[in-house]
Image (cartoon, rainbow, N blue to C red; front, side, top):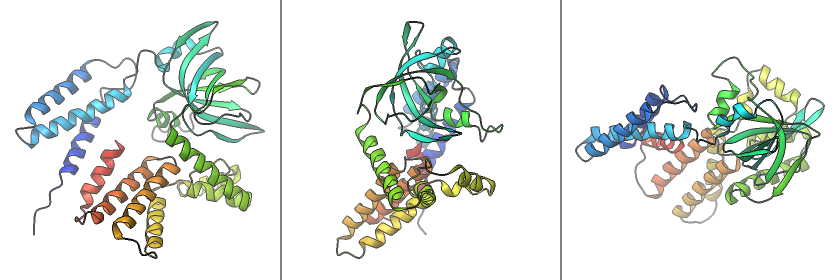
Length: 342
């Protein structure tokens, strides 16, 4: 039996170990010390020197790169909103920024609530303005005519995001921190949200969001409200039409995960598309290429969450091995999918 080489597996393991090791020192706050940076740079330099001499140097190098990736994400710039929050909390602040996520409109008691993530550019308080950066979660009461890529100006109060659970594992704030969102802004129903410009976002992200919105509208048109509320989250990851009663039923029965788009959905799309294309007399390379493209497009359509992205990458690697007529290696496939997400 020939020996199987798994270089990507060991590279990914050492990369994760670098992230895990430096996470004890890098807390993600503006007061993170400089010594984690010194350790990381030392690992990268030593690993780079020893990389040409053996495997150990390569592993040290990738451990240093893993630590470096974490530090660059968690070290906040000087004008980040997390640093300026101490001066802006308490009274209403006028913000200017760009909407960088899909806008969700849902029922909140007797009112409608418009939510989205905004990349801040400027904050003004008492006629004094300062440049700020970083993303905040904006919740505006009432239906607002805004969309992804709009540059807007709004007034609201800055505060910490809502906390739904006392468990750190299920903490909403910790979940948002992993997305580099540290604060939230609440906009009153009477406050104006002024749109300054449109179409400033990424072109491909805008295409995916528009396609998801179009698909959700098709389901709403040809299905009942209850059916559309279930189909949209199952296929498109859109929960905005899911009624609070149905949401509560899934929560009580512990089956809320069914409503989340996951790798299972990607597998069904890839398998179904592959079976459909076998009905047509097209070359195998073209068929595999179309299936890979379909999986990637579906991941982008549903928001490219980590489980979906991981499954799309794994599907592309496995089908790519068939396309290149190479034998697939499961551990290497999992490793490169994890490495791609990191």
